[in-house]
Picture: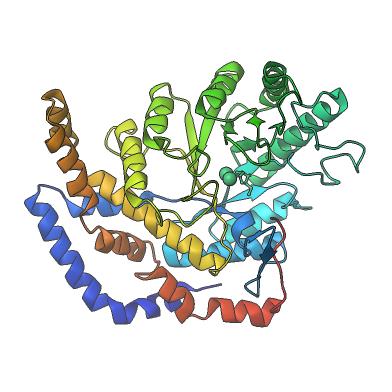
Length: 427
Ligand code: PSV
Ligand code: MN
Ligand code: MN
């Protein structure tokens, strides 16, 4: 545990400089007619769930180089998320992935999470691998798909796994299930494109029927990998068709890395929001494909434009959607990586809140492209760093999250406790 006093101690040396920066930034905003307190308050309210599957070092098929002291159990994963939250103050929940996470005593996990100040966010099911828990001890295989599989027994297993994940989530206090399917084909002729989609929709209807009334089901699209010719839920259009075919509790989840190169993600977000089918996000950044890089590390302007669409959808504030991080890091300490992503999100939210929506609408109505763009860039170029740092500080977290994690020696202590060879379960 990183106690608040230890975080506060890390803040001490930075405090005077931070306060001077904050005062300057607040004065600058005041001249623009913006109350810094409003932005700080909105940033304090923002939180994005940490992915339980990204607390250990990621890897590729070319190797994996563990960080040391990685969490070996779900309990230890919760402790790591609590450590991230201790320094960001904006990681107040964790998203689980079943069966990578398979709590034998869900009530105890729920209590442990609550005692660490954490809630259980959306549950993720997994029919993209063969695991004994999902394939009825190897009686079926998802090699040729799950819901889209030509074999009804496999389709039933896929439904059974997803309904079991919902039941587990109910016990854990979750309110949503995110379904990403690897279903698709690698070769033309391997399966019928229309029939595959129909089967997926049929299967998801059974899962949907199992949803408690206060739950949501998110369909997560992705164009390729592992299906390299045609993925069933390949894009936002397919995802929307699935959600619309299911019912009002079904919405679309946008993983920022799940788009073909140059896709206009902010426009996709605007479209889904327009029809009230925007459910949540898997935040990350990407350079080439589904790279799962640190949020905002490659294209922070795109992130800002996406979050600005959210603020527009929320009528000037961040709407309450399922905000999650989905990333994987091969070289950084995963906890530092998630903390950096969270800070990037805070920056994007802060910048998006600075956009003068009224002036933007006037510029748009007048066809003044230069002014419309200038209004956006004025907000994007503003240094919201001190506002985000103040929001963290007021939430009892760190002015400098990565510095604080290092300062308290969190990784060193975990290596001593869990061992240098401890490797996280999951990916
Ligand atoms: C698939 O690429 C994905 O983005 C889905 O969200 C999975 O649940 C996750 O990655 C697994 O790492
Ligand atoms: Mn994802
Ligand atoms: Mn992905």
